Image 1 (cartoon, one colour):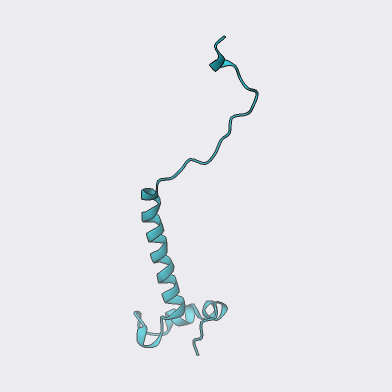
Image 2 (cartoon, helix red, strand yellow):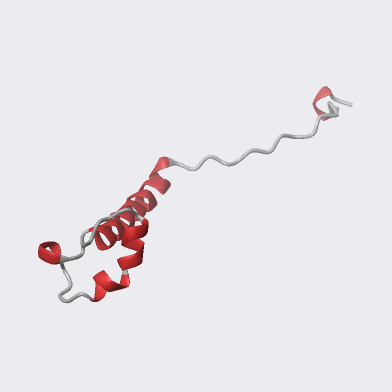
Length: 73
């Protein structure tokens, strides 16, 4: 029997497969943009910086704004 076929008795190690940065980068940019949009709407969507007229977004996110420490009134 050749030496390459003899088992050493140790279990084969299985690890995570590496993911190329080129595959992660678009998802990371997309996630970052979503987070920035969420921070904008929670923290600054009112008054002079408002993109959506009225107080609907402000009132919808009001409690979350206080929970995260953003002053709003």
